[in-house]
Image (cartoon, rainbow, N blue to C red; front, top):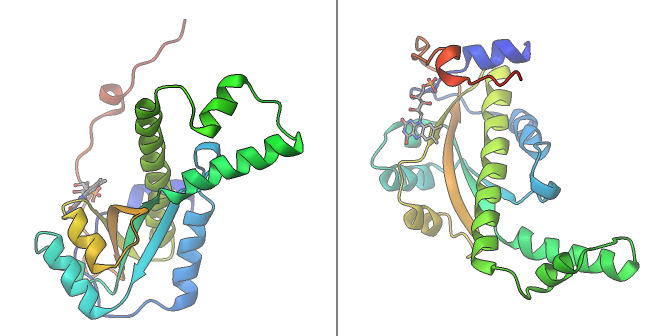
Length: 204
Ligand SMILES: Cc1cc2nc3c(=O)[nH]c(=O)nc-3n(C[C@H](O)[C@H](O)[C@H](O)COP(=O)(O)O)c2cc1C
């Protein structure tokens, strides 16, 4: 399908057929996440692919009882991987030692965790991490649509409960759930603002 057709025809799907998704298809979809852009190419994401019926039932309970979370054959928990940021400092130090980077003093201090406003840095990191995972997650959504599958973004859930259900280590923070499966509905497009309403042009 043309990219624009995929974008235009995507809908949030909340009713799914029981049909399973084969592993090859799932891998193709996840490949789209793997190729997503990220700040400094940090790839600070991890995706938990849940097919277990029991876990999907528990996730439904953690997601305010939204039934289709259990009914979808796959739920993907899209997580921020905080460890990636630690790894990035290690990588930077390696490059500095090799002489492969010509860094500013500020960069060295930041990499060593000295100076600067670390709270602000942490806040910016979280914003970047959120953007990174969101982009990769939407890649999943569009790749799925291209293969005839439906998805729905879910944010209405209790984060701590989901992290407990999936036994996530401390460094993985769940940002969103995506339900995934063959659609059993074909909803009409939901309304959108006009292009005029959402754009501001600066031409000179
Ligand atoms: C960040 C985010 C969170 C969402 N959370 C939920 C949710 O918890 N439950 C749900 O049914 N839909 C959820 N949605 C789906 C939106 O309701 C949906 O995208 C919107 O109504 C537009 O409809 P469409 O996706 O079919 O175009 C979410 C969407 C986004 C992007």
